[in-house]
Image (cartoon, rainbow, N blue to C red; front, top):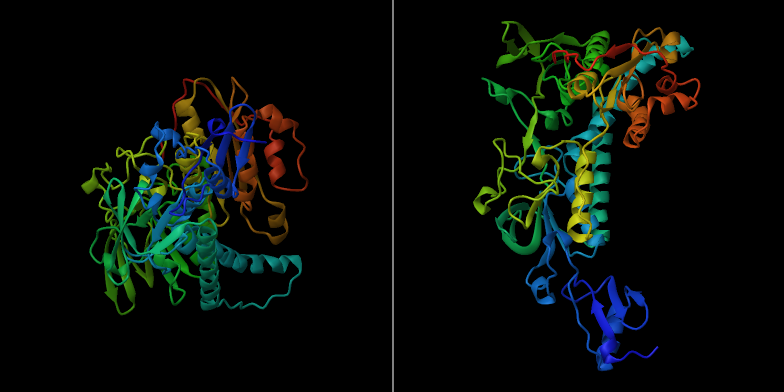
Length: 551
């Protein structure tokens, strides 16, 4: 086909200093359209040599509203610079690069225990959070399993030894492997990685402080904050004697006596880990039951299971002082009780890791705990600065940060404005046995209900326990709208709860009804089949009913 000068207009995105025009679009006015990818530069060269007039336009970032010029794009070192290479930051940078953006990202040097100047690619989840924690949970599960195996015919010596240092070594090997994988993912996506501490110094400028103190400055059309959160300590005398979850995953020795302060995910998970490995564990928390915010019926079962596994619970208890003695750390509670421990874990929550980012100096709004304030698209009040993940303190889960990072890239560089949907997000607490939920708890359903609520429950002894003799019940629960028959909440406490709940979450996301659950054929024999065989209503709660007090 012969092209004339007046027939051709070329649109594309300049993604680098060499004008690599991926995704360029050739529009031929009197025929059809041809997509040109890696051959774009050759086509442009031919067009120029042939005397054609080629108009190069930067690809529109829909959220910005206006199409920028090629000259404007060249004003910046990067289309996007990300501060923080955890799960959300890596996802956002990779996906943005796939849309054609030139992306830089910075992260602190690697270390299993974080501080203000050390961290690592992969972030909290990979290095000192979800992944190593789950490895430890697996390790802790084997102890009771070995004991249970005797009733299944296995001849096991009375004394079973556990090598903490071997597990610690294998855990470290795994997080180093994953750290390397994350770095390769960035490299393969064409993202430039800088090692050092990042801070914002202007609406379109970031500074990276390297290990030797050298400061590097880069301009970027868009800046993304993805620095996650940090564990916080209780402000009491002797607080320096306690550890956080960071150090708990890297202790040189397995502690024989542990006091855990907190009633959330981290507290009950580490209590389960250490108890499973043979430690004496005291768990102190402020409420009557652990896991505030979860379904009260599930919380009560978790508490019974923790006690059944040998964990000593101290409800409605806080710590007032830690003192180092010859016998260990003396822990004093607000009831005057004294406990002796080798390790005291503060699992008292996390706060956004934003203090050193210089955000307020450039006008970015944060709340009282340092969380970055963003709109429904993850954009701050400064139009060129965005934030995702725990730094925004919205829903602090790794898969949520991944979702936010994906939708950020789609919004800013994919020409498809997309808001995160926080409804029906499943989650799990990896205590032993685990708890997993999706949708509304019974208390939330009552509070939000416009009509009657139907509650279906099933409590049973898992088949595995019927042989081993372990007295530990599994509880499953469905919350259903009486008016629409939609399942609006599901929860389970028992073995494999997280694996089962992931499938249930898909059903809720699709708006499944109780009738559809009932018409689904179960897998037998399995615990999961209980979710499709709960026929009888446990209780019906009228719309005028009042929610139970959150204990």
